[in-house]
Length: 338
Ligand SMILES: NC(=O)c1ccc[n+]([C@@H]2O[C@H](COP(=O)([O-])OP(=O)(O)OC[C@H]3O[C@@H](n4cnc5c(N)ncnc54)[C@H](O)[C@@H]3O)[C@@H](O)[C@H]2O)c1
Ligand SMILES: O=P(O)(O)OC[C@H](O)CO
Image (tube, rainbow, N blue to C red):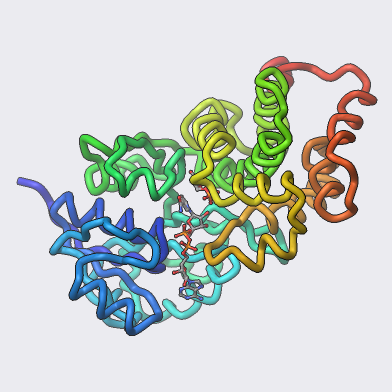
């Protein structure tokens, strides 16, 4: 007989809603926590989170609430799907509300500004007694909501945790794989957002297919170089949270980071693009953090530097490749070559 869980998902935006609904569809009771009373009422009444995912029918086992205490009461698994900028604040509010057995799972693909902290590090700092895991992969929320098949990787330090999450989330339309490289999986999800901006920019400027192939491959090389330098497993970047997510986010207008790049490529100023955006696009903040961390750690990242100069110093896009051209001969697949 299936073991049923009591689950809460914090953050009622597009991804939190989709994950909550997938879990409810697998037969578990899920509480979705969001701050807006009207939206909570509408979700519970209309079975739809119309602001984020219009037309996406929410399962009867999903209920929404604005009360954090109510959401997390008597649960055994808790997902966090709030933007990285709010993550610590929300994690802090959980202190004293959870049993130490409650498994925490981050869905957030970002990095906290001061200290370059990943979300699992924030959880370990704020809620040190609770086990934690992360989920990442090529998971455009809108496409999952439309019924498309997708896959994700769950990563933690324990096979038993990965297995619990597999059983909770896996279905015919959502395939779950496991990893022990929590740091690499999390870093992959955060870093690819930066390169998606670049890809959107390139597409707006009609870069050819060869150029896009060059960009994507050098992006993978660059992000894995940084991650491996920081202790991640290079093989993670050949998986769903690495090349899988990089590929989808760099090629889809459903990605908000990609759309930011497209808009900038069409000549819209960055500040205006961001002002028009009503959902989180983590890549802009991640770019800044990554640039300064890579400099501190001595990791060469010509694409990151090039994009930063385009966005923040009005450098012409035509100069994007100049750092790469002027570099001494670089290895193609350097982390494999050693
Ligand atoms: N949308 C996707 O396709 C997708 C897929 C995978 C991962 N992610 C990641 O998941 C995270 C959330 O993304 P999303 O797409 O759901 O974003 P979103 O912008 O659609 O929703 C974020 C939600 O968090 C809420 N929120 C913000 N600050 C909060 C706070 N302090 N307290 C409570 N709620 C708060 C917002 O009101 C909003 O409802 C991001 O890190 C994103 O990179 C998104
Ligand atoms: O819409 P984005 O750019 O935040 O990307 C969404 C997901 O991370 C894709 O896997």
